[in-house]
Amino acid sequence: MSNYDTNPFAEEEVNPFAEGTANKKASGQSNYVGGVFYNTNSRSASAKLSPLSPEPYDRSATVDIPLDSSEDLKAKEKELQAREAELKRREQELKRKEDAIARAGIVIEENNWPPIFPVIHHDIAKEIPIHLQTIQYVGFTTWLGLMACLLWNIVAVTVAWIKGEGLSLWFLAIIYFIAGVPASYVMWYRPLYRATRTDSALKFTWFFFTYSVHILFCVFAAVAPPIIFKGKSLTGILPAFEVLDSNAVLGILYFIGFGFFTIESLLSIWLIQQVYMYFRGSGKAAEMRREAAKGAMRAAL
Image 1 (cartoon, rainbow, N blue to C red):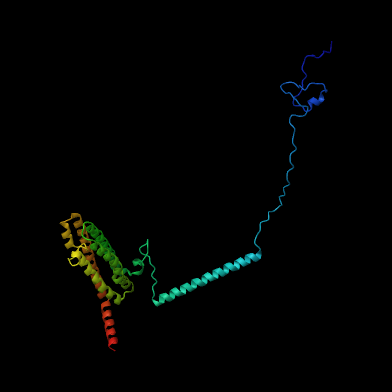
Image 2 (image 1 turned 30 degrees about the horizontal axis):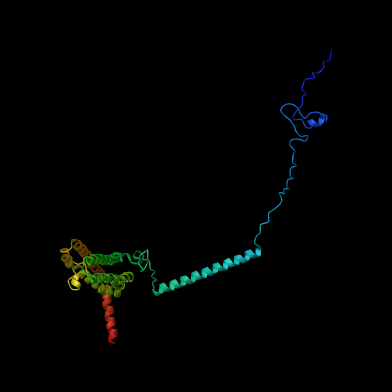
């Protein structure tokens, strides 16, 4: 036989990926399509959702950014110009006042020392002439030295009070410090500063008088004769020997105070000698004598 019958037991070859396989079969045909794929519904297993239509994009579209109008820009420009003119006017006015003050010889002193809490005006490097800066620096050292002496005097006298020497000694030491530091600044250090800055003969003369009083006090404190409370309110050489017998530590404190006052005295004597040499060498002494003679003549007339 030229034609062979197909095998009735062979499975029908079905493409599982073909769409509508169940529709091509008769209504009585099984949904089994071969292999491991088995469809339980007559509809497609994966129903497709219709995509959203894309929004139209216009490349020529622009974003509106609010900008100031030309009138607003002109108004702001005029305002800035008015402010600039006002600042220039104030600057010129301030410079005019500064020039007038400088011509009148008035010096504006701004407190700048100590840096932590400024209470006085002090700028040797900028305001004192170079040939007088050494004298001024030594004068500043003696003023700080006096502060150190009086502060150490409080420490030593406080120990003496604790050891039973009496409360009145401690009060006197406090008075020396509170009165001595500002008084020394007003009486002789500020006159020396102004004398070296302005090279004034009158201020130099006042410095000589007040600084001589300072030297006498330092010498008196270094000796501390038994005049006021047996001299123990000052750490001089005499009370140092007196308290050394009863208390060695207190005696050492008084001896250190004696050294401080001695150094302060010697340095102060050297300073007043240097100032006097400059005073005579620069002709200030002759100038002062002429001023004194003129004053006497005016008083007589």
